[in-house]
Length: 463
Image (cartoon, rainbow, N blue to C red; front, side, top):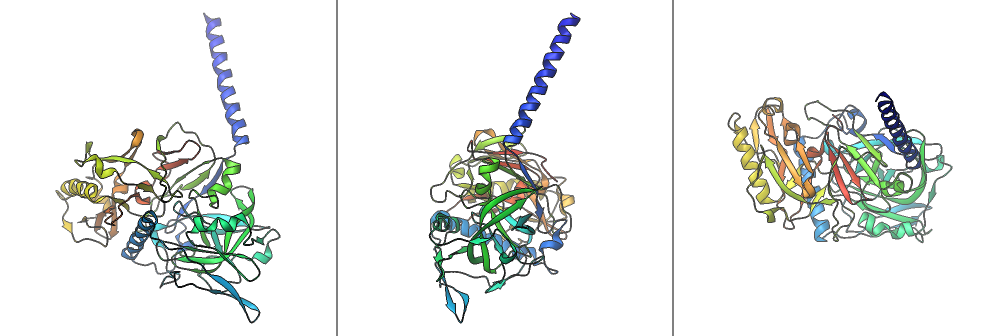
């Protein structure tokens, strides 16, 4: 009997060792890139925000503009823009077409909508803080000589002449031809045939410059040669003091797609918490490459022909305190985007009204309802620390049984001292879509498994 037991133990240990060796070999074959991810107003908020941040109502107004932009992308109402550089007195200058919108307040901090990491560019590399965004396909960074305008940023601008591996791409390249889909704007050329990009965002920000490639350094000594990006010469808008923006959307020019050939067709992130009143989370990250899937609950990753670059899933139901909202199933039959750049989740009108009714009924039993705050129309007198004690469990239920179990922090938001609102809003645009924003994703690890066309959720990924 003792001999049999010893044999079983030996077999078990051998099997465990084999599994570990296989996993280690697989990791060598498919390495994982792990980058820290910060909130623009978090522990390192001095890196990305100016001394005077705008009121949160302004950030919500920009959030509304972004949602309108996402609506227009599905409605195909966005216009493409062309532009060119002309030679004048021995130097180049950018000429804008009338269809390119530029912001009125360049350099204003983006506020709570931004999450960023640090990347190295060039040979030798210089490191820069860049915003990362699942709703964007193109990556760009501010470059000298900033021929029109560069917003103030932390550190110096990228200097192409300081890199041994930098080069501009011509209008004849496939990368230039891919810009129209990646940026939603037509590329054009300089008189010397250098490809020019223009990319615009829902908050009216814009970047225009030269399509380029150079070595990208990430994490601990990981280098991607010939990374394609925009070398921005006119960058105006709401990027805080970041050096630029890197996209994670489904497009061959995105940061993720360019890294996927080396690390695999999977990425995940965890967005740390943030607070308007100075309380910030930690442990946020962006990970590109294969990851253990045992702790995730998955839902199918869907495609939408009107905009195949965005990430879609199917929201099937919402429950409050264990009870499903009493709305028709058809109320959920709209395209649902999961987006790291939208702050407040948007729901169809009927679903939002039902959710609002249930939460207001519970919270108003102890805390007085007060006036709306910008797009947030369910607000209460009381701090978030006080009100979260009676916030019921809210669950977003997706196709296939995956769900997001929201903590009180994901449900309510203290917008100013002593005033707390529900962190949801109705999408009242004519072409209705639903959006899962970053407020509801905070502290939850979200994995995008493009190889298997699925999106997964795991609680407690960061704080």
